[in-house]
Length: 437
Image (tube, rainbow, N blue to C red; front, side, top):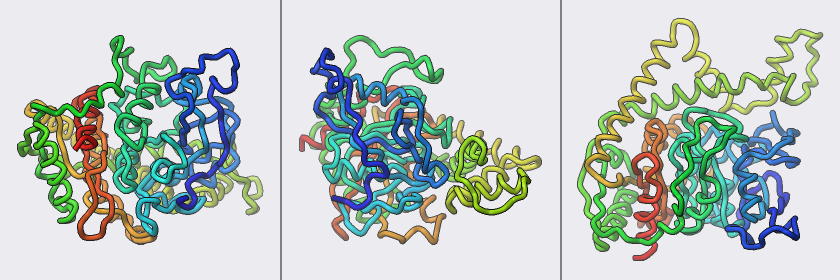
């Protein structure tokens, strides 16, 4: 068992188990699911990996949790994560890091590292994570499992503790593409509590049924910019996977996404700005730990002390940078320019997808870091998101599927496929072909 996968190791039984009159043939009956600890579970602690919420127990279920229960799934625990989703290694958690079951001594990726590790270690059949800039796809790649980042609006965010509202989506992990797609079938769809969700899918649509492995005639665009800077062995493994798809009838050609050169900086300005706003409510009144420091009734000092004690270094760093980007005199210089860059990224993806059915790249430009390697260099961690954050800026769906192992160190490498908005079935069909080789 990988170390420290769960923050709260508590079972939540599905409706089929609790109710003798319920249909015992729910689509996830008998399946176990790990849930990232930023997704609200009624009566079960939801900490977001932070000391700030260590004692918080939600009075309601997130929409995706209600749907899991209705489908008969059994939730086996709340999975460890980077604090408030801020990190790519699951090392910023206030409850300690999670080890990578596919590569002991290395990080499982983040911020949904506990969810991916639960599937990789066999602690759960399936898992839920959230993806703001790659937080499902990164750990899927590092742990050698499948992770799907849905189109923005396909899955309800009601009950997800917000980090970056305009960027994040809840999505599934599975050992296989079909498994992850079956979980997506359960959680996808409109929700009256989330106005960003799309209308109901056409009758009979099944993501799991799309995992046929049929890629005959599929055209794959390979953005050259997303190969630059990647480790040589990661690139070699990526091309081996593309060759597998070609052998099954797919074709590839190179495409260009010139805007991705600015995607990382645009993403972090937007994400940190939204985080600064979202985390303002953790003020020691509504949420937050009690402080032992005497502040003599001075609310400003109490507010500062609670946030000092409750937030970790990475969260503080992002709040400071986000507040600065939104401050008077700097909004147009940073935030507005980042939004302009976001529109450019979306335009580039739309143009590239007009020339190809899907786009393909390595999910991560590197193999899993060793534990502790990136903690002293946050910039290294930010730059490692270069292949994943553009997808969130463009509001598109993507999937990470195991592509093999690096020849240099034997560590997992993931292949990322990106599709048009609400093109999940196409991605699932393409990704599943790598399981039929």
